Length: 196
Image 1 (spheres, rainbow, N blue to C red):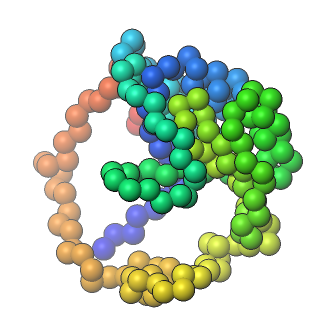
Image 2: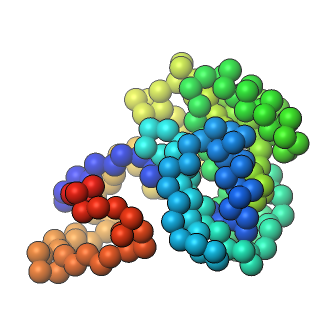
């Protein structure tokens, strides 16, 4: 099997009913650079740079309904596929600054929480999107020394941090004549030279 080289999470995509309010929060209050907008009324998209090649993306759908506030990590019943987005910052001072900005703008924000491997604050954007801002501990390197603290781990977790072969069928390579690429939304915004 060919090894896949991952480069981090490019973006989670969220929904807003008010792109102006969303831009004001992420760009103007929190300082994320707005790097790309596409679409138009009823179907806009905006991309924000969260550093190191990570982005946050929002679709504007004017008829979407607000979600209720939900505490980060709190179990819930019924359909659910998302809990919160976590954004790393360089140092603890950045966490205090974000806390001050959210508080001044009257957005809910938690106290600072020490999780051992990081310190975090929890808040919400104007769409009630649950956000965690965290500063990793310089004393903990989970990439080098993973920690497994589940008191009753499932069998798959007991197998350790590395991929385990034999659980899925071996893929057949996609042959050249089957490698079709369809143009997608936004393609016309970028000259061919930028995509090669």
